Length: 356
Ligand code: ZN
Ligand code: ZN
Image: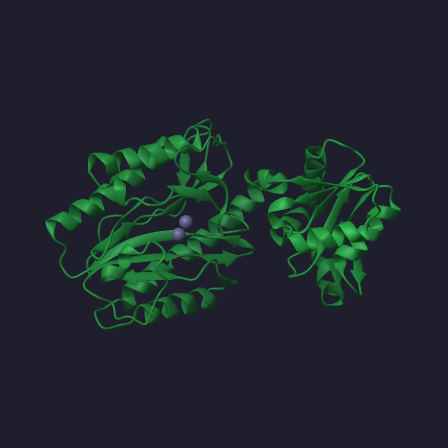
């Protein structure tokens, strides 16, 4: 990873050469330096780039953030950063508004001279993170490959009487066995009427007859995967089959609509239109997709009317769903890389309805 190039891009995003970026969001710190510790702040400025962290990370920071100056602090990392900025004639500090608490902002204000201005920025580093470089794409491909293999694990465990949590546990154990750092979010196993809960975390409920929504992902080398498949326990009715096929068609319409230059909202529209024709759009209660990378939910969002323009190298999910309260739900989700001419579906696996 070329961290110095990323730091340069972040600097270029701050117009004023007397301004410093204070990165407090750990995923942004990691993106800019490689440091994966759980505490630390980064100052990026024309006067220098310095990572402030504490003694627990002395060795790790030096190894991971090679190429970035590391300062180990005994007290608050923000206080050390504030002192450094005041001592290096920084005139303004750009903070990450979405990741700065009111308390942190107040503390920072009290630590820096009055003459040093605080400017709120939004999505400055996140904007850079939207386009993945070759190294990131390789890591994402690896994460998706491992993550996708967990579907087979689930299929081996799902049977009437097994609990949702048992299915999730087997998937998560298998993920760790295969080298995953962790899951990218709590595994969703939602069966029967619970499948109508778009984010139905695995519960102690027994797998019931009907749809089972499985939404799962792993983190590998820092990068997330995210996939959903819906299977059926028992024999689906004709109406349930139609519902499943409508979601499948909607997801395909979304895939077909993706290419560099297309507006995010158009992809959402493509999926929603299929469900409208099937008279199911009112049950599609979330957006069509989101970016994925160091975090499970990143920019861009693929939602109704979203104006972001898709660009080559973005990694997004396409995940329309239909959820009929107290009946059941279906969602199908894949991650794709946006390309100039379309998209590359990562680790495509079967989408015909699997019945168990
Ligand atoms: Zn998902
Ligand atoms: Zn997702």
